[in-house]
Length: 91
Picture 1 (cartoon, helix red, strand yellow):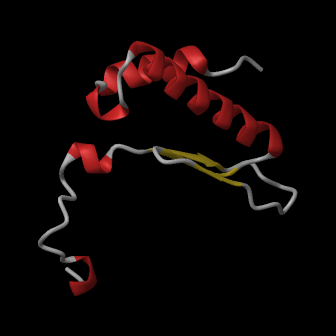
Picture 2 (cartoon, rainbow, N blue to C red; picture 1 turned 45 degrees about the vertical axis):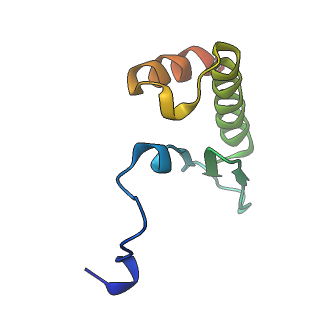
Picture 3 (cartoon, rainbow, N blue to C red; picture 1 turned 90 degrees about the horizontal axis):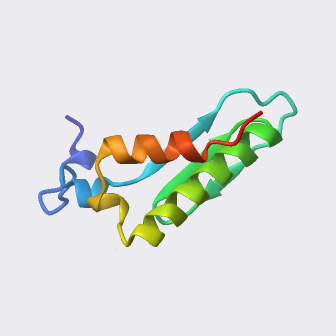
């Protein structure tokens, strides 16, 4: 393993440290580089429409978690998946 990745004090396997959602859009044909970053999610690429949908989905998902009084670290992968599905806008 490359030494730059070896850091004994970094709890990289701790889910509380690694809790982050990542969206990647692959349908960009206009040459724009779209990036949206927040504390617990990042969205890269995509057409304007795709990027906007991913942003809306993640924003609403975190809004729902806040309403429930939960954080992403406390939420199961299944519940996150259900919220993402629920909050994905229709075409």
